[in-house]
Length: 332
Ligand code: AHG
Ligand code: MN
Ligand code: MN
Image (cartoon, rainbow, N blue to C red; front, side, top):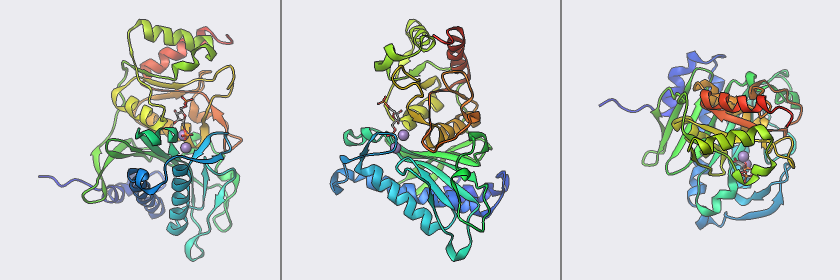
């Protein structure tokens, strides 16, 4: 029987395929894998450790912060500080960037963007949540600390991106620009093992995923597209954790959309650490990701760390179909 490949083995084998082959990126990806295993452990035991529930704070985007949001954020930051493979972090849970000085005075070439815990409003009811990350090559000189411009790069500049889904099993899915691979955590050995090599999104699909509660606030094109899905008797699935909703879309096909609304004209989801990394993964799997004005997500200019965007992401045929409705009803 062929022995299964662990994440560490896979990363080392593929190092030469990376766009900017370097041991540093390899080590950084490995350290992110370790950090998410620790987060996974805490999530599994959250009800026992008294880390469920709200933390009586809100973040820069005005969302209520859960205790596990803070726990996951602190843990990722601590892991990156001791890893020495990352020059700084921009996180959903911190207003500004967190520069990290290198170990033994050697500074890293890379910075990380992250949503440490996505879908955290689902955690108290045992529904899937996730961690999203993206890695950029820094623009500033490696001799000094990183700065905010290192993070304000378009999605097209991402060197790697991934997510971990804490679901019925825990899965890490990532890309370095050479396709997408998925790893399932084997709890008996504590390792992510290659379970889904070379993931390809179906060309089309029957699922559509959206918070229909905002229907009346959506622009006309989006409303007409949703009515069309309804008329076509497509299946509605909405978990309320972007990672879980996009993960299903990646494997089963269809579309996930979080459009802009009359009261959130810029959308809700964040470009830097939610939409760009997820778009890189879906595009690498053969899918499409646009905003609800028809522009490619990864080409959007970014001027603020917590900038928001609308998004439609998934199977090429369905996203194109939605884009057709957007075009037809532009400005309405
Ligand atoms: P986060 O928990 O990181 O703040 O993200 C929550 C996001 C995303 O995961 C999900 O798609 C969306 O919020 C759900 O929002 P609604 O409750 O408005 O549908
Ligand atoms: Mn999120
Ligand atoms: Mn979050």
